[in-house]
Image (cartoon, rainbow, N blue to C red):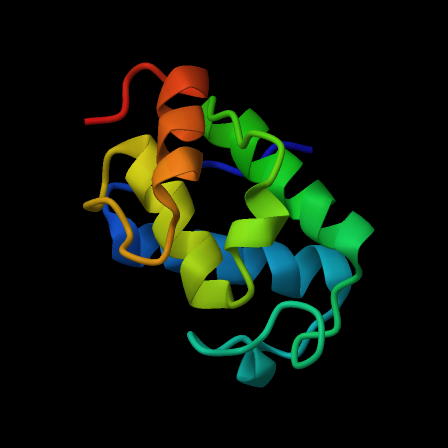
Length: 112
């Protein structure tokens, strides 16, 4: 079942959409879903689950997360900032490498 995205219009609502996705699909308590929470160790998602989350975000917002994305994101905030940047809701996150930026731009020509 696809999740509605009509209310996602900026990085804050993108963050909230992703929090709800992880809460609902993986049964993670919302209290654990803080900005600085590590996706694997603090939230408890496996690599496969993080890949599923990226796939769900990509499908919902018509985004492509290239190979190497898991090397760039460790925290929930980083995941949300990356998705928001690729969607055009946020500036380029400072934590991503120059090479990864180029790969993202190649996969998503609409990035500003």
